[in-house]
Image 1 (cartoon, rainbow, N blue to C red):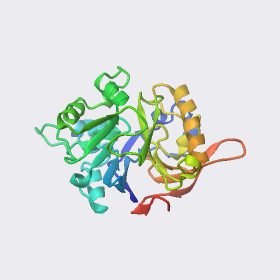
Image 2: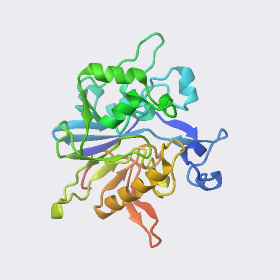
Image 3: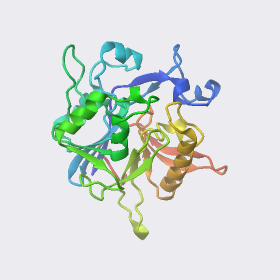
Image 4: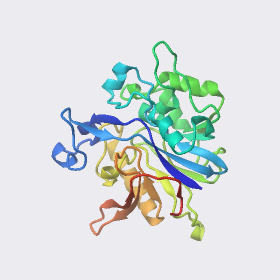
Amino acid sequence: MKLWSILGNSQKLDGGAMFGNAPRALWSRWSAPDEANRIALACRALLASPLNGKTVLFETGIGAFFDPKMRERYGVVEERHVLLESLHSAGFEHDDVDVVVLSHLHFDHAGGLLAPWAEGRAPELLFPNATYVVSKECWERANHPHARDRASFIPELQVLLEKSGRLELVESTHTPALGKSVRFHFSDGHTPGLMLSEIIGPDASNGESHGGVVFCADLIPGRPWVHVPITMGYDRNAELLIDEKREFLEDKLARNVHLFFTHDPECALAQVVRDATGRFGTTHEVAELHARALAA
């Protein structure tokens, strides 16, 4: 099995919102803001093939579904659908993908499922041969959002996914589309039912998998958020997220599971470490993956 990091459309969002209660004097050392106080963010997907005999895409980024006014409002940099170009560069097309796994249905993680915006054209679902995998709790949240995060969802997307007949809702640590090759972890601090996909590593000593890769989604958007107290203003429950993150990182450190970041503009993959003070950090950072073997 090989892994590719697949870049989608990039964003610029308010640094204060992205770093929660951390002061600008601190977070600006990690992510330099522009004149509008916005920081650069990637929307990176992970492609694995063959995984359980299939070509699997973890997330799709924000895509290009917004009209020009909304694209400007949410800081989407490119007009074109970058994810499709990145897939093509890796040797794949969107109709080659057998499974799309979504950590949640916020538009910056699921918008890439839709074709690019065009005047007068209704939203159109891409990946016509894929099973769409999402947690049941995330699905329910997207269909019945709270006022606080209603704007983060695309109502038309849920309708299209359900009509496709290829939607698979996850309620446990595994799902039929991926078998035992992927194990799911769940978190509620950012949004209810956030699903973190771990591609199982080759070392299963003592009955416990080691050496895999986990898609960190919005539990840990990038390297700065590996530091446990750092959260986002977008998180529904920052204290819960901090507790979940600490437990998550302790587990990945103990089992040498590498972290894959979706929003870090410079780093796709890293190994988690912990220093003498107990602070988590990263090492062996990799900017991008090109047909990388899982055990490499």
